Image (cartoon, rainbow, N blue to C red; front, side, top):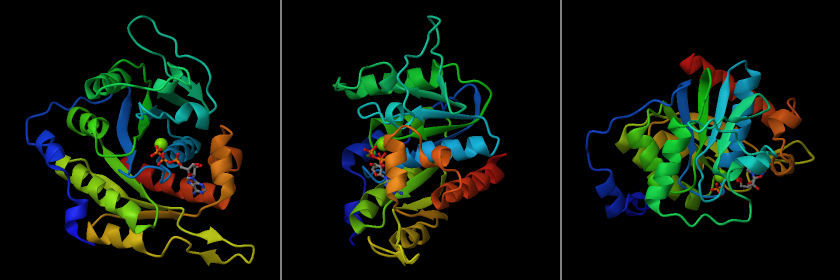
Length: 274
Ligand SMILES: Nc1ncnc2c1ncn2[C@@H]1O[C@H](COP(=O)(O)OP(=O)(O)OP(=O)(O)O)[C@@H](O)[C@H]1O
Ligand SMILES: [Mg+2]
């Protein structure tokens, strides 16, 4: 695989040229962790919601920020239909499953397409990081949109990010984008905590693991970039269905194999930060 394909575009490199950025912390939280991947549809939102739930069940106070302005997922994955209250200055996050949540999807209806230019996206991100009354949180988990665009840049350059977790599926084509994503965070000085191999295998009725999308590719990428390989998560229809029904697997079935993987990971993250 040629390196050229995973390089950042010239426009992106220009935007990332060194300037002195003032990185503001999100008020009301100790640590901010991005769930990213550059590639679309690999399970970032599924991962972000379940990790937020697992950290909550491990006694952490957690916020979940849906940074996907064009395609928000949190309203559906957490089955939230209310609108956040505002005191004219700040928005109140909506609390679901003990998690403080914010998403552009709470403010618009599901059918309305977001036809916004880059600066509008940046200003929405600023509202969500500076004008939401996040309260006494240990972690804010940020569900990033796909790509290496304005949202990732705004977070990395203007907000104090304490880590990024990169989600991938095992296919080479996903990993091409993932490598670009890792390079972006490295270049912008955001610590990549490690990689997740999502939809890594399927457990058959015979209890054997089947590596349907190829074996070892995410781990190899982690080694190549000297990042930790954090976990492999199987593909399981229950994981998809529970998200679609608004109650992700860690909440709907905490004893499920996948939920246990998330709970182990939550403990790992807790031990890194707290
Ligand atoms: N481990 C898994 N097992 C089964 N289905 C999964 C798993 N992880 C994710 N999915 C399903 O894959 C689809 C894509 O997941 P998700 O929306 O979380 O991806 P995403 O990376 O956030 O996508 P986007 O880039 O559009 O934001 C969803 O239908 C989800 O339910
Ligand atoms: Mg998503």
